[in-house]
Length: 302
Picture 1 (tube, rainbow, N blue to C red):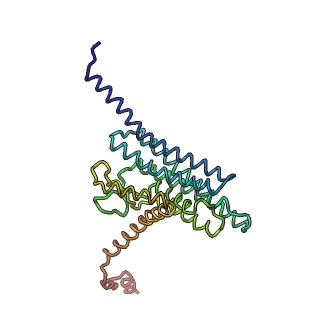
Picture 2 (cartoon, helix red, strand yellow):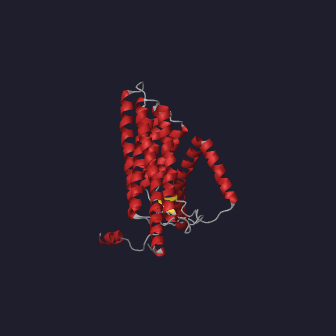
Picture 3 (cartoon, rainbow, N blue to C red):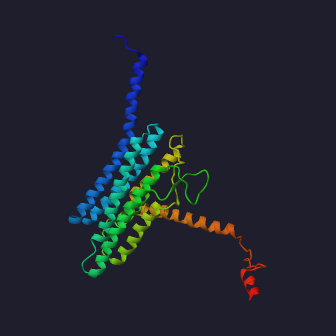
């Protein structure tokens, strides 16, 4: 039986192509798995060891962020992007970075408020926490929908021409901010009303930043496909060790810096616009009265 070498090579490439499509989907599945694990740990915290379960739930969300970052990069590097992969990635982000952190934020910040505080105050905090965590979920879903329909959107405060930016805070970063804060406290739930209030403000701020049109650095100009010196690998190894060894402090600091970098970029852009409109040191223009006012004609008729 004669075998056509061209046909055999084509079939081999087709099998390889199917495997390459499977590779980014595996990372997306890992993303979904981490989100599901976080949800189960948050539910287990209600009737079990709250501190340990909530900390594991936060770690699972933080662990899912590299999976979300790698699936798209691997798909682009291997030229295996597809509409199915994009839709699957969006659905995974809604579960892992929308549902999981909103549920975790409510249970950690409001569910364990003690009965010893004022009953009316506790009820108001519980209701406000439920509503704000729901707004976070809606903001994340809206952020993903806007990204899907306008992948090349430009921020209201444009940055450097050679750099790429996200329009609004990406949902993995917003979820990472909440998870890193909970992990910073080792998962010990909130027991004081004066901590629950700033927590509600932080959750609401993260939801607002996602639907804003402010710029956030995307890091897409970092190219992993080109060659790098060996020192870069050594530097990455050191960074990974520091992150794993001091994860609660390092991840919380990184999340805060990234969050307030977008706020600072917006404030700096607004300040520069006002500065261009009015040069520094220029005297304030005095109001000049026109030669003819409408009331002058009215007075002349009297």
